[in-house]
Image 1 (spheres, rainbow, N blue to C red):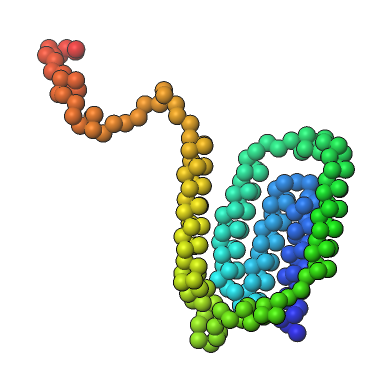
Image 2 (cartoon, rainbow, N blue to C red; image 1 turned 180 degrees about the vertical axis):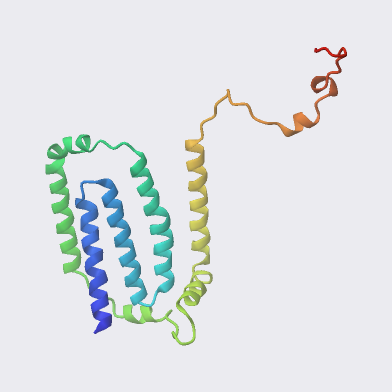
Length: 203
């Protein structure tokens, strides 16, 4: 009974937070509601026994993505009145797309059926909880059966990081950069000058 009540509590708060993310007028409030939705999603993963996935949600999505969104929204000077100006003009197009999506989802769920071996395949990679923890089972599956896909995803993220750096790099020719090799190999005449100074006088 307590498990069911906890599930419904997390689920209701997550759904309400998701709705408030979309309906909030203040972008900062939307990001804060998004963080709350992530926390409740992590709580649902804990109830399912996937504590490693819950930790990833908190660390990656809440600790990095949502905080980054919050900083970006707070630093940008967003004109809320300008964003609402074209709402009525694009409302019919948005409503038409929403109707099409609802119809497609309805057709999809109406014709949805589980394959005969679906439950067997889903339970096949699940080890005994008493023998192997959730994190260990996920690591064994990820680094054995899906190791090539894992490496490819890491390579794609690496290429995306390099692309982001190249696109945002701005070269300024007026910036003076330090050259260690040139400084070390400079001749003595360029950096040292011997002057004869009179007694009680200056240069």
